[in-house]
Image (cartoon, rainbow, N blue to C red; front, side, top):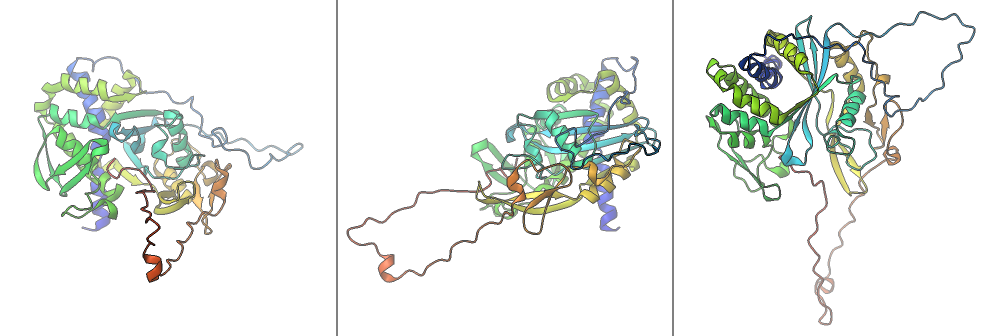
Length: 421
């Protein structure tokens, strides 16, 4: 089997993230309380307008042409495709300051029976005025959920119809309600962060995990620098890509156990977790309808996609004095991917419909539409070279008897973002 084909199968199996952890649990809750027979309806989103970067912060760059006296051509109307819905699914880690490190754009085409999921990297650079320009910090900022939805619109041209926010702590609660989940932990995990009261110590191998074990596994991304197991924090550990794969595989294991008939007796426990840990703006009658449709999805028609772009982009921030790692999205690649799998509108989305930050050869930043929110982004930003070290002479290296040696204070500069949150 080819590596590409194997990855596609892994992505299809990862459908448990959306279908079972949310939809299946919702169905179990509703069935258990005898609500399934209530009248359910499909959402009506025909009154929604296509996302426009001009209406959401960008400015017109050209004056409209004067067409007075010219024969007008019929206007092409951009309409919604029938029963094609979009969602923003967020995983929020309360231990990481409320940042949304898991962000998924989902398009569900009900008539076609397809569900596509786009993973949005947490380090994606966005057009904002503050220093660290990463999309995962928007939700916890003053802009909140609406600001994050607008940034997803800038990146993809799609303004999500609905949002679903899941506290990662809910996964541990579900695991405990199930009596534990068997999972093959892929690495020895050895990480300590007293500042966040985060301690991850898990042995590699297949075993029954408790809720606490589960939370450690899904939050892990790197080991301590002195760990004998490798994958150290200073070397990047397994990175975001590695952690996302662990999370998908684990959620699949949770999904498989949720579907077992013996667990239908635990509906009340699932209901309590759902109401405590899931926030959504989907009306309940629509949620039931979605859950019913999702239960009939063929796994062959469910696909996960990675956002096109450069995950190894760097940008020097003078005010912080450090190079920060960013994901630079690819405008052309995104427009093509969105039109093929995610566009809920009849007209195609173009690069001009997006507001994506890109890096020029001179290390300055540009944007596909509108203006840069931070004027400094337009200036080449290169980390200055370190001054050459001078060779010490014997006289320079030894302090005089009259002068006390100066001991520099311990200082650290750099990105303070924790590796495992």
